[in-house]
Amino acid sequence: MPRMWKIHKISETDAVVLCISGRIGVDELLELRKLVSTEESEREPVHLDLANVRLVNHQVVEFLACHESKGSCLRNCPPYIREWIEREKASGTLARNHARDGANGKS
Image (cartoon, rainbow, N blue to C red; front, side):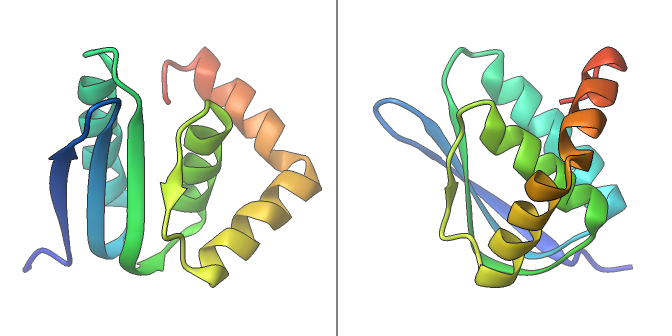
């Protein structure tokens, strides 16, 4: 199956920006988690540019919201993803899932 997404890394003075395009599903999320974790281990903040993201699922929205809650920036976040993140925050499920994922070693 062809890849449905791409990531382009940009190193800025004070952060690393991962520019993502396409669809992000469960398989892509696993790869994205690893990449973010690797970049964060270099002690630079990792910002995500979502300008060209076309489709995400619930797990991706949870990851994005948790990533943002740790101080990272979601640049050019499409309105539907931003609205979904805000609904997750308002529902309170995000805090429970973030705590669960932290206990399981996920970011």
